[in-house]
Image (tube, rainbow, N blue to C red; front, side, top):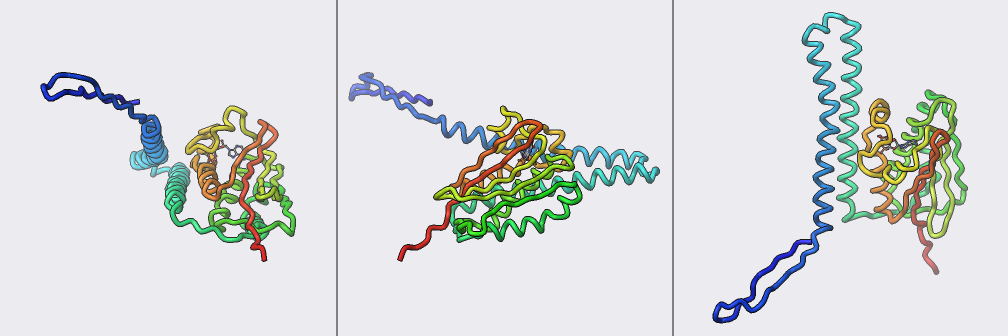
Amino acid sequence: ILIHATPLKDEQDQKVGLVVVFDDITEERKLEKMRSEFIANVSHELRTPLTSIKGFLETLLDGALEDKTIAKHFLQIMNSETERLTRLIDDLLSLSKIEAKKVDFAPKPLNINDLVQKMKLLFKSRLEEKGLSFVSTVPDDLPPVLADGDMISQVLINLLDNAIKYTPTGGKIELLAKVKEPFVEIAVKDTGIGIPEESQKRIFERFYRVDKARSRELGGTGLGLAIVKHIIDLHNGKVWVESKVGEGSTFGFSLPITQQKED
Ligand code: ADP
């Protein structure tokens, strides 16, 4: 709280009182703090891969280039770091696009079954490569939801991508959907490493990761779930997580059902 005080004077310039203004700036301060923390985080996240790329470049220039095997190995690392940088920038752009869309967001009736078929095709080879089984349980007569198709594809891509990343070979990934009036609930369930209880409430924050090194190693940006939450908030839905370490995780979200027009 900010307090301004000004003396109140009469015609003879005598102090006769005091005007005190209490200004509640806590909300403003909080936003300001979040903004500067976000910029600090982004800078750090961008700098990490750049520092690594620069390190390998310098070593190559210092002579490592002469050894073809070492040189190739360094170039491969630099290549994957570059890919991570690109992903990070793409994710940051997605976040700011969603923020901008708050103004002219126009959801349309969307069939979840079609989207699930699309996901099956999209992830088929990655699931096979990693030896993961995939099951989808979606009723044929699931009512259409009111949503932006591209955005909900992004949500499912991020959740399935995580499920694959954090589930060891031999595991199982499930996509479930059901009606819970006036919403449809969709969930991505895996048999992966799980998330500790104390991390579960922070998991949707930007750049929050349970294990920084592991996320980085897997090419993560720490923004996937923040994007998911942003998109679902925009649709007036909810997101949640249930998980047990060593057993698996379930990420769920809800979307409003398209209301049929009464005759
Ligand atoms: P990242 O790019 O690091 O995967 P996300 O925002 O998508 O970023 O996820 C944040 C963190 O949540 C991850 O770093 C990981 O620690 C945890 N996480 C997300 N999904 C899962 C999952 N299915 N199983 C276990 N941990 C997960």
